Length: 77
Length: 403
Image (cartoon, rainbow over all chains, first blue to last red):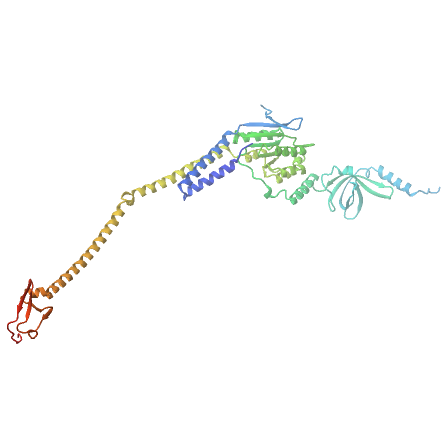
């Protein structure tokens, strides 16, 4: 799992940016900069929502003590 | 016949024989209150059981204590099972206890209360220790039985709310011998592998004995140790286990746990879309505002006629200049006037003027003759006219002022 920022953090930062922009009182340069960061964060969040590969696995322990993930098959399937 | 004389040991042995073979005393269930409790270093427990009027010495050997789920204390009311026999050496009869249960409340319940109190005192239940559950975890771990309805329910709920979330199941026994060790070990393993960022620990409904693994200290400790947040989901709504208190979040059922573990995907998507929309709107509004501000500036007169201010200054300067010139003009005129006047005056006073009128200056050498008494007949006199001079000789003198 090498994801630098959690979904929470990204959403929270995005919300902050939106509030700052809605309040106005920013220079045009600042607004553009925040906007770009906002788009970036939006993309990150979307990616996290869509990217996750649907995987249900079961952990099994090998003889040497290490663990493996294998697909979880429901009893009924 | 004479009564036989017996030794002390013989008497004691005899009494022991009577008690050991007595139907009632060789297997008795008794209720009493513990006092003078001593837990000997050998592991055997010595105490007195009493009621309102009497007491009996009691002992519970280490081998029987091992199965005790709770810790006996002075004042505790218990029901004990065992036999009454004699300690021959001292000539004491006492109760030899094989099993002890708390009187009035089950031993399991008592053990539960005792562990709960102890862990609470240590601070394991403190809300400040609880870790926040991520709303969109990268992967969810489940510690539960791989068979059974609980795991199916959880997987269903998770799929429904967030179809593409990753789930890792760690199969364990959820009751019986070794189950608590397995559960604790599963939690520790997830923490070591760090392959999930929230763990659901749970099982379906059952009796207090069946749920007992989740009340064990070893499980409570591993939950408390876990750096990954844990949702406990044991049994039904009304079942509360120690795990529930130690966990970072308690779910009333396994299905509820799945719902707590992840937000509904469409809800999150909607939130994200909304933020994105607001982001665009906000920037657009900002740009519009700055744009109209700029336009207003462009329309302003100082922008359209930038030279206006220069013209204004030029005008002022001109007027100023005119003013100055006028002033100077006046001054010069005045001076001219004065000059003319002076020249006129000068002219009037000029001897040349006088000469032109017919007067002449008579000189005797360089001396100007002003009076007739200054000359004699026969003197040579020079007459100065405005345009020259004439030499003369005086021929006649006639004294007499002009009137």
